[in-house]
Length: 273
Ligand SMILES: [Zn+2]
Ligand SMILES: [Zn+2]
Image (cartoon, rainbow, N blue to C red; front, top):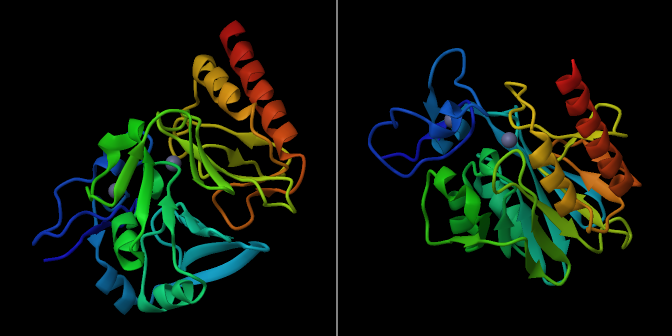
């Protein structure tokens, strides 16, 4: 019996003798099936192949976490250290004893919150190792491939995980796409962690939004106006996307609002052509 992990998207499936026939996450038009066809691995095989996790510091009390060499779609996770407990934002497929010991050494994980299904990865494995709850938006319930009673589906626009950390439903990339607002980040000016919900552009002075990143399918004006209305009330100065270097250091709120306007302008011009 093995818990099979999809090599292309990194999603872990519940224990069974043989790998699943399909990966529903990859078959969705927001992802893709790898050129070599559907392939599977396991945590044991990844460990034997030499995968490991690396940690780095984004800013005080905010760690980044990634697997090397790069696995699946190169997911990164973030660990926010608060006086009320540590929050894991987004998740990665690989986990080993060293990772668990290191994180336990700084107080373990109080809760796991995930922006959208492309980062569900091995969330149940992580939750079991740290005895943590997982917070997912109810509108993405159908994309959970590994059901568990550790998963808490929340609905509505916001949920407070602790006095410093609030999850905000934004939509867009996925119907349940979520961001995390960390009030005391950026020296108290506020930090937004966005996953793929808001993606940081190459110059880090713009951000963008997509229905599918790998297949380059944009979002509609109606959806983008909904995204804007959810982001507009939030107070933050710095924004972290998915990768180690995807950060808007300051004036991130202004960057987000200008970027939404630029996106809507581009959609209008497309319609005029
Ligand atoms: Zn997959
Ligand atoms: Zn995604």
